[in-house]
Length: 264
Length: 307
Image 1 (tube, chains in turn orange, blue):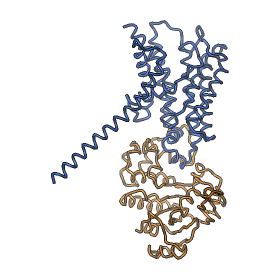
Image 2 (spheres, helix red, strand yellow):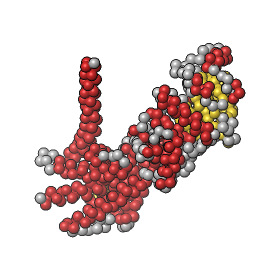
Image 3 (spheres, chains in turn red, blue):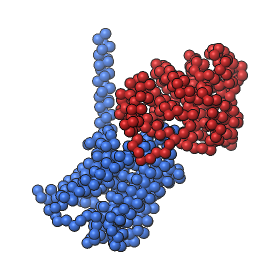
Image 4 (cartoon, chains in turn brown, red):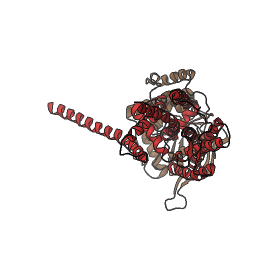
């Protein structure tokens, strides 16, 4: 489904500030894989997401989606394949537009946008059904401006917008990190349900160790631009936070340092 | 009384014709969040193209269409400079505005050109039947406003609005934000040039300096309209822009009735109107907030003390 081969990415190459963000990443996601990603600050998790989405181009290496080489494809074209939810609840929606207008834009993911009406009656019914899945009453507020919603509601809407057109790959970039615990819990539950029901191939970056262990069928750990550990479904079932941290220290030679880390 | 009525209907007519320009400014300034200064140049471009073509014997309708096309081209060039050339938005507009000054002189061939006695899209009409023309103009402007509303509700229109609202988001859903920006700025300047063409025909001449200060007049119309009539939906917002343009003309006409003001003071008056319209809402909001915060704090302090 998704294959990364020998990806390198440098920031400020050739200057005193040179930093190796990714150093030879190899990763393969099979259809239906739900992979959680953890790692220290500056391990390259966000860069990895940006390379996959097309927001950044790698200095070396290839990105393949469905065996098609998309390395040089710009982000807006690659979005045919990729749904993405950002950490910032404000990032995934247009605040001065209504809920139904936001959904209409997401509905046209990767298609040409012409002079047809964006919100038709048929689409509106479909949006209402989809919003009802979230279970937070947004289906009754189709014409409300998104800017009026709370952070949690906006993130739930972002999640729906990223997923309801069944993208080949779903990227979740610490999408619960900016929310209070109750909201984060809601979004985590919704994520779990949506990914399971639609069998989405998913890559999720998180700071929450417990979440990283509980969700998904695979877990990868990153450090200094490398994938240092890839835990398969069998081993993942018996994983605990202590063992995970221990394993990290053993391989990387230092403690997992992340100022936002949540153990569970 | 007759004089006031004539001046009022004159203001309304001018307001309606300039409303096309204000709608263009609304598209860049409010929808794309792109302060586009091309307007000062493209307004004249529209007037110049219309004047030259009518003088050369072409149909005034064809001349109007050509003016619209000229504006679309000028706008798309500004859009290209910004989106593809990565030049700062404000600077892209200024560069086009300056470039257009020379181009407009080339089109006109001289600093001004008369249209007196020529056929224009406005039929010759007796003074006491002028109100009929006014109604026709109002209907046409409302139709154009409704077309813009409809466009902004299409898939492309939604992408255009999202480009100004959250470009990162609409990019992640596969819209090319470079393209939507270019389309938006182009459309905006098309409307501006159209306005320049009809104004040239209405006043009977085109002039190399007719566009100077247009952007500020456009902003004044948008801001006055929003302040007086609200902008909750696109339908309301574009209606507010048209009405704002009319109110602006009336305010200027009234200001000019003051004895010690000269007609050359219009641009200063415009600048002051825009400054007031920008400062007052912000200042009053922050004052209300402060008052509210103080009130709530006192309530909280009171309930603490009562415990």
